Image (cartoon, rainbow, N blue to C red; front, side, top):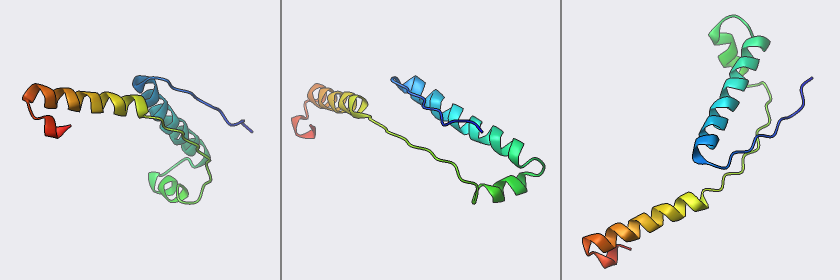
Length: 82
């Protein structure tokens, strides 16, 4: 039996790669556990247990977006937009 794995990402690129890797890992395990038709795997997805914990902190990204919004508002002369 495999042990749970903790993956950590600190950049947007790493986070997106990690999410894709997690999906690929689940797909691969499903193909091994339920070989054969795609229909059988799709049905099994509704009942097979998998644990996934996700902590998502987009505060730095959100801050950049807010700063860009304020900058654009200042450049367009629309101070009420910020």
